[in-house]
Image (cartoon, rainbow, N blue to C red):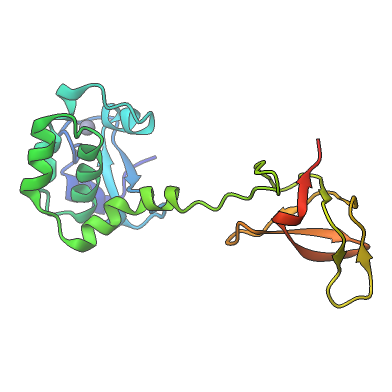
Length: 191
Ligand SMILES: [Zn+2]
């Protein structure tokens, strides 16, 4: 796909990290995924492939970050910083990160992906087994089905549960025809 004209101009048709030409593509700096020019960095295929593979073993190539971290384009700065943090065994990389002294807002962007990873909601049943949407579970005790007089007995099988996205202690499942929220501590994954 051809580069957006604005990106072509900004990058002067070179990789904004290492300056290579040819095979350029736009890369949104995670956790951004959008098409906004200001969230994107123009990358050559060498940089792109290594970033996609999270392979930073070509230390010699990544020395380019010592220069790119001084870019006036925030996305380039942030990406350079993120990549340098993967190379922090190297003294020069630590020096470059320190010297560039990124603003708070840049740091927030640079660290956002890691924080999202760390904050990932993981659902586990009463035995600590990880649950996924679509799993079949068994009630480990009698449950009052809210809003009805029905009590679902211990041992009731609930098929095709759905994880509640922002709450690791809740899943949704159908009991007696009603979709209800069930606490993970009252279920056991069925094998
Ligand atoms: Zn490059």
